[in-house]
Structures are given as C-alpha cells and as structure tokens.
Image (tube, rainbow over all chains, first blue to last red; front, top):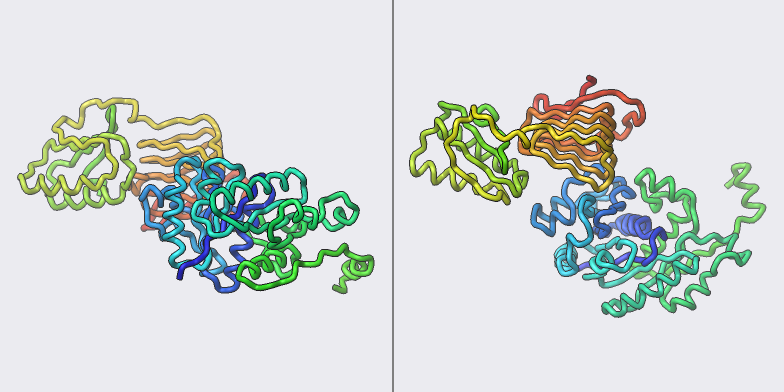
Length: 264
Length: 199
C-alpha cells in the first residue's frame, strides 16, 4: 500500500494549519483510512495538544531520525481511531535537528503502510518549511480571507512550484458570512482569482474550534458543527469525491428564532 | 540490583563501585541489566568501572567488556582500582538547584537529584539520575532515576505532570485531575507500579 503524502502549509502563522491537519486526518480516519500525521514544527509542537495526545509522547521524530528508537515506538495511536497515528515533533530541539533528506526518507518508509501521510508544516519559509515539503506528493495551502494571508499563500505556491510540487489546493479558513456579505471581508471568488489554484474547501469561523482545540478533540468529530462538516467534506474531496463547496448563508430571522425556541 | 553496585560522580563522569564478595554471575547480570536500562543516559561522560575487591579471570573480563559496550555513546570506559571511600569530586555529587520556572522546550538533565524552585510547565522536561523535587507545580514531563534507579522519587507541591517516569516506568496524570489546588505529593515505585501519595 503506497499512500500519498500531503503537506499542510500556509506561510503565515495562525491561519489554522495545525487545526486543519488534525481535522483532515481525523476525518480521513473516519472513512477507515490509515493515516499518519507528522508534526514538522520541531521546537514549537502543537499537533499533539490539539489531538489530545500530549501525555502519551515518549519518543519523537528527532529520536527516529537519530536512531534512538524505531519508527513504531514514536508513533502514537489516536484515542478514537485505530487507523490514525501521530508522529510528534521534539519540543526541546530546533528545526535544524532534521534535514529535508532525512525527512523524505522517513516519509517514504512511512508511506509504505499508510493511505495518507499528512505533514503539518511550521509557519515561515525557512528550514522547517523545507523539511515539511520534502517528500510531499500534494500540498494543501491554508489561508484566511485577509490580504496578508493571501499574499503569503501566493508566495508559498511559488515556492512549492520551484520544489516541483505542482497544483497545490487551497482551503479558505475562518470565513465569516456576515462580513463577506457586507463587503468587509474578501470573498471566496476574489481569493481564488488571485491565487489561481483549485479550491479544496472552505471552513466557516466557528467558536467551537477554540473549545475543541483546548479539549484535544478535533471538531470533525462533532456532527453539529459547521466547521466539522467542512473538514469532513474536505477529507472526502481528498479521497477523490466530487462534492460541491458548502453554501454559507447568513442565518435568517426564522432560523435564529427557531434556534431560540429550540425547534431546530 | 542496586545492592550489587553503586555510583559516585567524579570530575568527568561516573565511578561504578561493586560490593565486595559478589559472585561474577551476579555482577555480570546486574551490569547487563543496568546497561540496557540506561540507554543514552551516560552520553558524553566517562565511565570508571572500579574493580577494587573483585577478582576476575581473563575470560570473565572479556565478557564484561562485551557488556559495558552496551552503554551507548559513553565518552570512554576505564577500568580502575581505587578506594571507593575516597572523597570524590564534589561538583557532580550534589543536587542541582534551579531557581526559576522551566518553560516549554526547556530541558534540565543531571546525573544526581534535581531541585527546582519554580514550576515545570507543560512542554518542559526534567531528567535526573536520582530524585526530583519541585517547590512548585509539575505540569511537564519528569523522569527520575533515569539511569535505572527504582528507588528514585518525585515530589512537588502539585503533581499534575504530562508524564511522570521513574526508571523504566511511565505514568500520566488522570484526565479528571484537580488542576488548581496545591497539594504536596510524592511519586515512587511500590510493588512495580508508580504510586502517588500525599506528603
């Protein structure tokens, strides 16, 4: 089974790379796929916390690269899905502890018995980013409807192309429908026009993300959350399904009223 | 195991002393076990094996040499014969005292005990050859007795570690742990499990 490696990257920090990695991975595992998430943010690891697996870490990616342990010893099995694993980053080291070549070798080995290997890239375009993209077959770029995030995403697309990773796809995160409708936020069409790449999905702004991140339970597990639905859709598109992009509508008076009286 | 040999810190490493009258078989098996458990703990330091009071044949020496090779990444291994009662270098002999809070990504490693006046935050790591005592909250990863000593203890004003390890044992805090109240506790190995009790 030779799986695909997907790098999740953005250039800009704080747009939701780690949250997206955790949720896309979880959503793929829901479809019985064998998935390994790799935290490439050595020195500032977060993916373990978002997945709620922090207290299970004994070995990390640097231990694997330095041959202090076997790969299987460092891989942490998810609490909820047997087919989902996390290879955590080291916290007491830095990005130079791993080279792009070592990373590529590690991913090649891991791919042999996984359907998907998803690499959570650190912010920036320095060595950590170069490590994260080495060995990637596909790239998912996360951006938010802000000029700065889109600018950085554009830069990343250029860098990926230079590395031979063509046709990256974009996920637009933290969209607020009310602001888009008022014209205060960049619209999806405007952003796609600038970036000129395929849209993999959109994720609406959701307060539930904060709660789920703090609890270590990816929001994709939550049936009621719109953001969770969005991530489940993205996972299905990654698996090759042709799903229409989610329609985001401002809540009308009627639906708000129904919510208020507990009808929906 | 610990009754067969003991450790003393010296200027550039560790001195292993053996109890007089131990048979070679006992001696061999305990060193073997220790070397396997120690892993990389003695990385970069010298290991002095004190053979005072131990009689060893040529073939036993060869076996011993094969065993001590298992100490990974040791700078150098010496066989010596010196009186273990002598005053050894004091530097590494003492507990290490840290008077600040350890933050995420910071790691403290010491071959003896470590005393911290401050907290150990999530993401920080403390690795000690002997005990770990924290006058504050432990929220990160602590490893006492990292060289394999099961007698090592961890004590803190609040024990809420991400992970607590003693020798080769690993435990983590219960998910429903009381997070804020200060309550001095210590952790040690009792009947082969890590046990926590109030101080």
